[in-house]
Image (cartoon, rainbow, N blue to C red; front, side, top):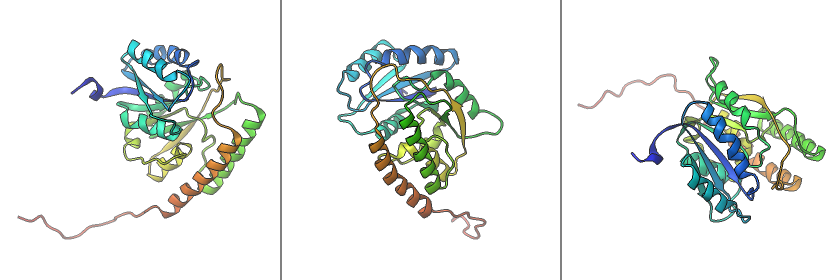
Length: 251
């Protein structure tokens, strides 16, 4: 068994697209916090075709600490692909996702993981940004988007756009994602029968760099993806076997 095969306690998956100014600070917060939890961990930085030097910076950070792993795409493929690549390579019993822009607060991670182990066991915990540090336009557009998604999907997730989430690794093993589906991870997991809880988390102003999402690309693409999820929800197989008879083993 190689080092890459050894199971770990926590895997943190972070999509990266042109975030060179934030990567060192992100790991500066993440590593001491994860060290303080007392178990083993890894941080997977998934470079989604960056062109600002983030790729080289990820390699530098990975060379300096074996607990940091760089995964590099040939070209920009989108956030869903970055999450999926991280999920497929994560070794942790628990998988945590977050953004690289420092707006998610790493200090919330212990609470998310702790929620997984409470008596009323759940399989995934998704954060919702209690106090958004975004412009009024982005906050309103996010509220409208969440309302429409919940109405059409039949779900009740407060904040599908919050990347800070924690999952038991087994919930992700059979999950098949398509472009744009990272916005619907809680709904997809519930469709598969997993228990999903929500938890308020912090939200911070972006210290450097610029947002990669605008209202137009969120609204149009998000609505098309929503129709796909709605179709999947209505067409999924939902049966329960109550009894089987006959069929003795052949001698």
